[in-house]
Length: 426
Picture 1: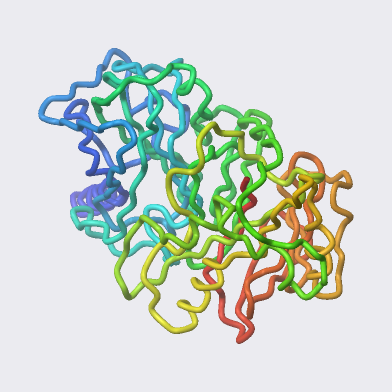
Picture 2: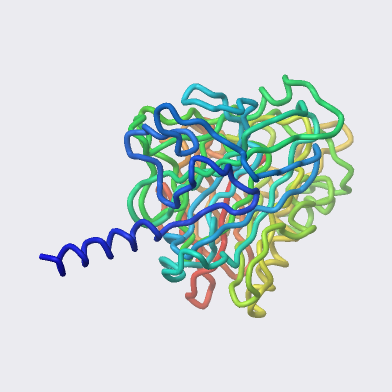
């Protein structure tokens, strides 16, 4: 009996120490942070708070100037294949279940680790070699806030992890309306009628303007399920005329349109490099931006007053020439159409002609369910805001499989899985 009891205790101890903790920003001192998920019934949401408990900063101190870039670091090795994370803020210093949390950063896939098929080990005290960052909005009010890191693991039980930290925002105070316009924090897996899909990286319904897509060991993404899930964000208005010099001639070769890629915020971000860092032996993901025509909305991201403040490119140094080539392809991005002097767009003809012999579903035609991918071999499109997007080319040397479905799998021509995540953005 003693041996059995000891064995059970050892197993429980291993489980209790088998998850991840945020160590930067520095979390609240009390209640003592645990590295497990929130309770399945949501009874300790938010911030692992139980009935009657309050957050105490203690020795924790985090001061962030508005507009600054801040690191995000973790402790532990039980990364459960990675997953998707968000960084959110509330001006409630004693948050409750009714507090308003607003997202300032979404990481879809590859968080808190990239390229993992399961866990990295069982050392709960080990430093996570993958580090990330986020940018504090420059136009929100200063003052005391509570920061939350939420994580939806890719592999294992359907859970949500949440660690919180006290933060002082400094600088020239902005308008509260700017904070209110940010998307709400996504919440699932706590008995609220919303869940996530096992073995896939979560695509947030409303990730906000500051979103980066990375990868795990597979490029499998999916939207949440259930009637209690957050509604997708509204489609942004067509992009304003940029400074690029693309002629938009629609020659069908793919080389005649969008030579002014510098006018695209997402393309420019891809060229500037990614912010999360990781060991050089583990390659990061590549984010391929898609540029739908003005006539066919193809995004669920909300409009934002300012351009993205962070990058959406390769998230780690390349480990092999093939990965470097992929990163270079992502930096170049698909052709970014530039409006003609008259203000009209002529990019759809050149985009459609790049569909490798398949036109897919007509752009702008009705579709459901929301978020469905349509793989066309070397190109793809997605159902967004109830209509099909224009067909977009994949990176050179890659192809997809699976036809229409909730996720898209992308592989290199040599059959090896490409660490590529595709997400439509403004």
